[in-house]
View 1 (cartoon, rainbow, N blue to C red):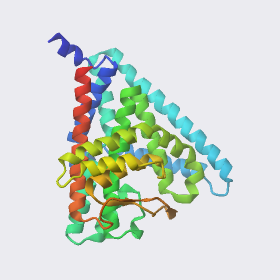
View 2 (cartoon, rainbow, N blue to C red):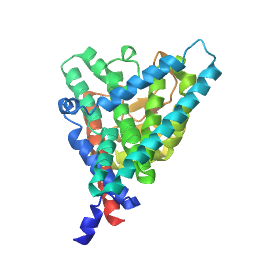
View 3 (cartoon, rainbow, N blue to C red):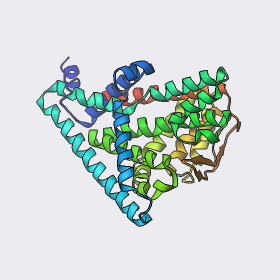
View 4 (cartoon, one colour):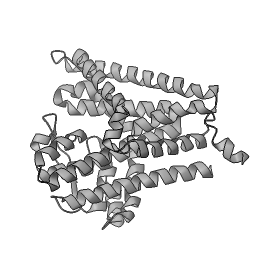
Length: 336
């Protein structure tokens, strides 16, 4: 009984405690992150909208295209460093509340759950499935646009499905495995820094060529931060393939082993390769984002024109991967 109470003490913050908090945050994100109407009603999407607005403001003020590329690169470095310093300060400040008592650890769980956003990708993929099933390709393309991996106007039905599969794999690797990894390693400051870098890099990618110099520092730091988590995320996708209808875990393992740094950014390679092999589809390839042509190698592990059935199985793969992540973190928390 004493051990149980000690384990529930949210004021403690050992390595095992952070795993326990991460488990609670993952479960809270799974429960409170959907359905979509509840997510919006509880204003859980407000932090993301606020960050996007702030990035738009900074981009307009600091990334003026009449300035030289070198100047914009330097400004991007300054923005990335300031954002990281603020993230560390905020993380340390919120974590320090634990010293006031055991239940002051709850804000940390809530904030980590908000960062993880486990349910939204499933909701978006489900909306795409329903829209394409009903023949509403335009609606599907508008929903798919949240993944922001390809320009929706330059993508056909199969491209939308392929992009949503990629979105599920990358979100799991980047926003779930990556944030949990850095939270367990460095606490809330680590998770905040990983989230900030991910947001800055995604923002720069969506804005195309004009923002490439400004976002270079954040993009490279994000790729570095996700170097280990992307491999771990890919491995979890491989394991999850065993629980997917017609899943191919052996093909997924071979694809993961064959993945290398040929992707832009390199962090995308392992999760995309694992997902392609697990589902037996082709992912990657040349794409346009923000009007900019991006050359990536094809991951040819099956059909170049994935079907709705493949997207449904991708949702299974994502859900099984999330379940495995929660179980593994919880088991390590109990064991340590």
